[in-house]
Length: 284
Image (cartoon, rainbow, N blue to C red; front, side, top):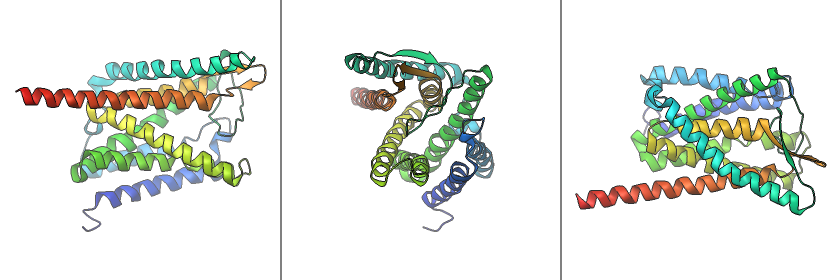
């Protein structure tokens, strides 16, 4: 198969281009260490690239799941998914803290996700609005590229399972940049980097599969996009568990429980739906 016809190679090339811009911002521009507190340049670049790719491909945004008629109902579904399963994560976090004699309470303020536990609190309305705006840009780019574009683009040639796997793998590798910078900055040792990077990439890939399955079975990016947005913006950046000894000391546990339980639930739902459809086909 020639390069002209090989969509996997083309997809990897697109990914590498985006990854170079992403790494350049994280390592050199470091927008997340400025007043913006978020690396958003690479996401804006990704959205612009999506416009170009869709133009070349002669497709519309609705062809990759951005269906206006599904916006509100599907976003509500995504919100419910995030709220239900992260309630379990928060409950486990509070129970653990209480058992340790260090009870916590919730506070609302802006901060970024940190693999090393560093927290900078911002409470101004301007920071809240920037946090919301940058997270909209973030999920628009990531869901648009890794779910809407990649899965639609690849499944025409290699089928849905192959497209879902490749999109999830690329999404996992996309998140390797953050622990790499922590290693380069001396915030992590090499063994810590190895453990953290593997865990972070695997978890991100599983999240990619979850959102990919939601996209596949709904034909819309909005459910995964809304779940992704509330996960990043509210659960990670805005809503925090504070104790006398720190902030979000068990955030990783909260994220693992919230994401893994929702992943299992989505997989089970998809399998049940597939079995029900197959049984109905056999009856008819």
